[in-house]
Length: 336
Image (cartoon, rainbow, N blue to C red; front, side, top):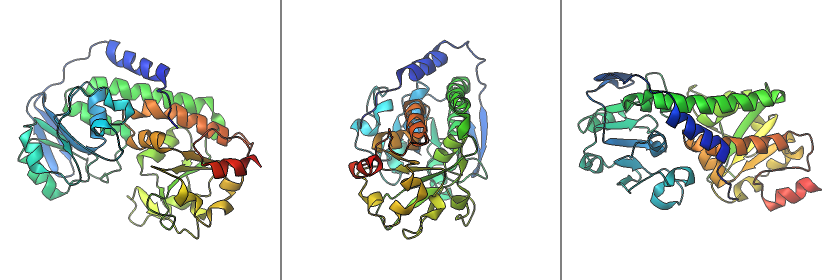
């Protein structure tokens, strides 16, 4: 299912960013501490590279054209999803798979953003020979940095901290409005599940994951049984047993997909979940799953109102109603 861009929210966000009062100019040189050490950015960058998955989104939201960016997933022109594609003026080199250091060096960047990239110490050292690198802060997992801190750190590194702050504030205000308008959600438990590879390999996202953090801003609590499956404490995702899906049997269960629903439907334990039997589950199709997963300044305005509407119907107490992307087989079952 294709969804229209939530025009009122995005328009308001753009206006907020465009017409806010000018802020004081950031001062350079700029020092940024991170888990690999200290990076000094001597002057406001003009040529910006990103090795982050979904890294182009926040740059484009801030009016910056990346000189190179990294493909994550999805079959879209120029490797950008619908909320971002129209903002890219030209097609720069696109990193696919492992980082091609020569490809990054060839575009002669002034700074390299690596806040959601999974780079190693060795990768950092190689990238630092090309340009200053902005890496994940000390104490954060490679993919645990909350969406708003990621955007603010990106903005700060580019000398655009105030525009980033304005856009973050607009999204946070919308999330707060959603929570305030649905007080019955506060304190309810939620699980976000997936079966990307097969029905035999289900998984769920922990409270360290950016998607779960968005739902917590809407008032929900991460299902404790999911977090209990963590071993190191910093995992953003944990594996589930296909025979025992009880950890995700929360007040609200959200399934994400990048394609057909076969893997979920074919899980033998799936129909026995209380959340499934009572239709307190939400099936989010590929496009909104992508926007939710990117959790960027561009994708969140695109996704959160649609996601909130799906959740609202799932929790309306009527198991025969739904407003999500559930497969036909489940839609028929819930109507009976």
